[in-house]
Length: 113
Image (tube, rainbow, N blue to C red):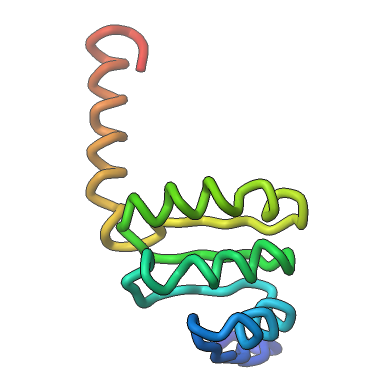
């Protein structure tokens, strides 16, 4: 870490224990979820973050999880000032790059994305 920076706290909770997730979300500024399967374990984490106004980032590549999360918790997260950012990892990068390449090719060929 750089000079003057404190080591970040590591907080632990169980996706099967809503009370522990709420305690975690209340103490954290951001929750980084790096283990799945997200559809099975991730929705309670997103729910706690949305309820507490805590930012949430994950590495999922599970589109059904993302859709369900958005449908259930987008309004609550927005109301409470939480950013919920899915697909920030390995699974999403190839499709993101493919989409970027396609958009650029369309723009070059057709003059518009």
